[in-house]
Length: 295
Ligand SMILES: NC(=O)C1=CN([C@@H]2O[C@H](COP(=O)(O)OP(=O)(O)OC[C@H]3O[C@@H](n4cnc5c(N)ncnc54)[C@H](OP(=O)(O)O)[C@@H]3O)[C@@H](O)[C@H]2O)C=CC1
Ligand SMILES: CC1=C(/C=C/C(C)=C/C=C/C(C)=C/C=O)C(C)(C)CCC1
Image 1 (cartoon, rainbow, N blue to C red):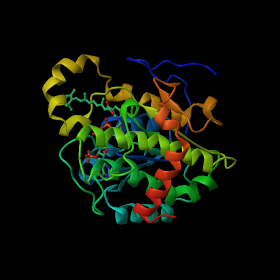
Image 2: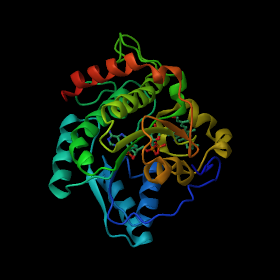
Image 3: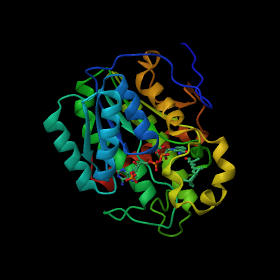
Image 4: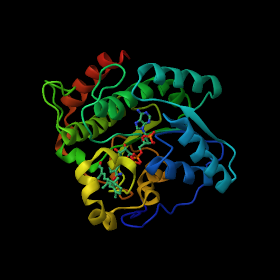
């Protein structure tokens, strides 16, 4: 395996032509998602940008098409805080395409006062985990039919401090904005590992990653983050730098058969012990089926 280091300003350097590949990126209108789409567009892929704000999505799409001259970039409505919206997105996608080579579950929300999704899920576990759980499962038939294919889950290093609160997954008894975020990012990896097991032998891989600490809009609801942002800023990656580990997970030929792993700075990295808890992964899967109605 050729080792790439994309810490600091390093980039995923392996060149490739992705013409003909169909890729979905969630949360594609800004930040890491937008830069991921930009590079995939440069490499010729057909990319569906899944966004909840169509004005921002269309603006980002137009900019990327203008820059890359790739016309196969599409903006589509997806609100991960609504199960109906997820089902509708998948229905419409399947009417347009009969294959999906790469699904990139990138969208995310961080911190802020407790808010609820349409179905009453706490927003961070709801969007970051439950929404992507349903989206992925609804798309699995086309992903399997497109094997070799990949699923990439954008998690975070905060999963190292994350705990799954089995007694109060929805933060109803007590809510901590940081705790709910790190719980959702640990959930991303538990989901990755359980799904990897279920996909053994199908030719579909699923991996999770930490993009680095990146200067994006993610901190918009984070009061302390905003306060200290001038101090933090020099240590943060650019959104382009933040997209590199996602590109590595999505494209690197060396990863063709590797599944259930966690990456950081374009390399495999040891995940937290809590992320390797198989019983918890099964519990979370069963709970997610109940919450989303997907069995
Ligand atoms: N930035 C960082 O330092 C780190 C980021 N991450 C992870 O990286 C991923 C990308 O975040 P980043 O680019 O930094 O953050 P941004 O806030 O810049 O982008 C997040 C994207 O998710 C979208 N989104 C939020 N809620 C929903 C929803 N209900 N339905 C559909 N899309 C939604 C946003 O849309 P809109 O613009 O409309 O709000 C936006 O496009 C996240 O999963 C995050 O947890 C992990 C570790 C560190
Ligand atoms: C620089 C900067 C910000 C900081 C964002 C940061 C520091 C985000 C870090 C997120 C992490 C580490 C997430 C982990 O999962 C703000 C607040 C948006 C305001 C504008 C400038």
